[in-house]
Image 1: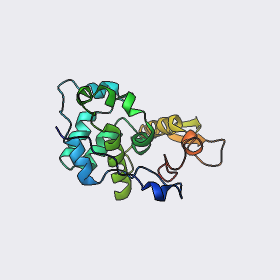
Image 2 (image 1 turned 60 degrees about the vertical axis):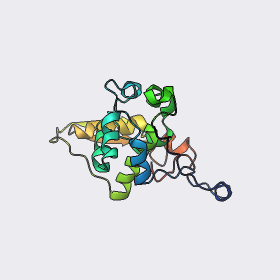
Image 3 (image 1 turned 90 degrees about the horizontal axis):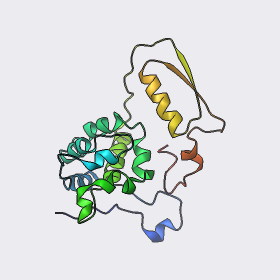
Length: 189
């Protein structure tokens, strides 16, 4: 079995002089190589370890086949914030913890693969998700942190008009004000 693909990082001599993101993300070739490590288990533990219930084997299979656009669609069925989760989610204690490869070697880098497809979508241009016909109902959401953004997206998809109220000057909540730039760049939020 192939070893886990390391995440390319900014050179340490360069990064001590800036606040840019340290982890640079996988290239398409690296992502496919890492996805090929997935065993496509009959009863995937990784899926059970995911708090938002992303179909991990399906999105990894899409990456393996080079269908990155399909992979992000699979992820976004359940997760509205894949670029953020791929960077800051404690996947080593959740989905990756239940990967069977982790019993003898390192598990599949699920979080890194999720980040890859989210970054791929950002580079190619966001697609506005389709929504149902307008219901005529208005919903107020207080706060624009991860929970506020997620519920707003779900309500908008259902056809409701959503108005988000934020106390601070920029939306994003803890994502903007609680996580340093080198870990989660503001442009990703």
